[in-house]
Length: 144
Image (tube, rainbow, N blue to C red; front, top):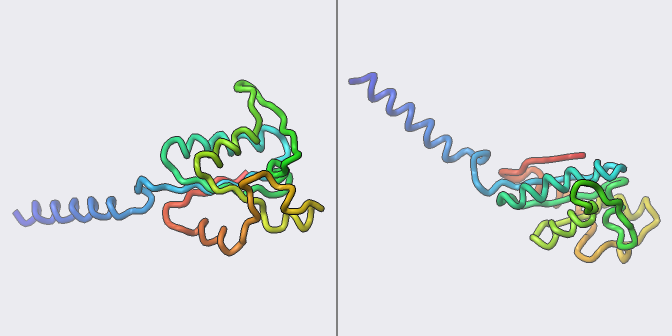
């Protein structure tokens, strides 16, 4: 009898811990950095971000280095197979569906571009805000 109660108490404890575990929560968030210079390096993190969003995750994207060129309104992105779309198409789909998209705070001052050259809806990131979001509960990070 005493062993049965101990087993039930342990099982109940594990059940409650599983419910309280933020990694098991449905409200997962995905933080994606895009830094790559090739079309595949830029596209694949955005493909995965769109899939995560389709599965219910909140998505935030930070464009840095060569990846930040996607944020420029005059940038013409290369198409990729098999869907014949561009990384910019993927980025715009994310924004239409509520993702926050930003360029690194150091991109504009080190690139010669001004904020008025950014695509509509893309802003300059605040490092403190980004760090806080990254460290928030249920946030997973994809960096490429």
